[in-house]
Picture 1 (cartoon, one colour):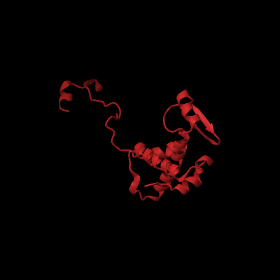
Picture 2 (cartoon, rainbow, N blue to C red; picture 1 turned 60 degrees about the vertical axis):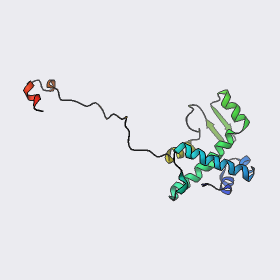
Picture 3 (cartoon, rainbow, N blue to C red; picture 1 turned 90 degrees about the vertical axis):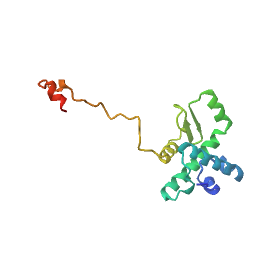
Length: 148
């Protein structure tokens, strides 16, 4: 299921070059964006009905189409191999400084918000536990501790 239609992508994109792509190419980028979203979040949103989440999914699709299209541009591919940390094309810019995320703050925040968080953390530590020892009370005798 596409969360953004061909027409919506053409209307909402920041890149004139994307609006000039063939329907087939834009639809291919939409399919790639949906696959990216599924892999990133680990969720298949095919049956999603929450209107707020559907708005986010549409926006993520548009931003991912831009991100994927931009990554296919020769100058961007070349800069990825040259270790360039940031790039600006027109009004669109991205940073690769830490190698995490897409470099587009809005897209990264939306992707994180769409990624489920599970409440179980088997590796968390609440803090040091304190076992009552005989030295906690200097007046305690061994018999006082044995009963506890």
